[in-house]
Image (cartoon, rainbow, N blue to C red; front, top):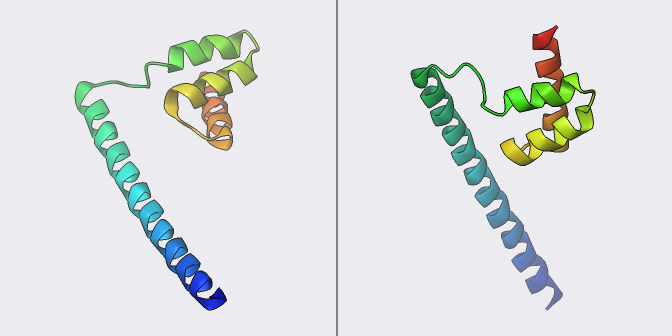
Length: 91
């Protein structure tokens, strides 16, 4: 009984890992497609960047990170890096 449960758990973990890897690949593909569309349309930056720059100028970096995370679907670390990159570009 216990070995059956372990076997089922093992296969479930493998299945979930494969599913996550497939989803990550699809996300990378979608990001690539969006980047290509952005380049074709001549968009130089993300539309939310102006609002993020305003928050940064007002000293509201935490709010800027939060807005970046909500709008762009970033993790906390990715949001922080995105805001830091905007700061560097403006200086």
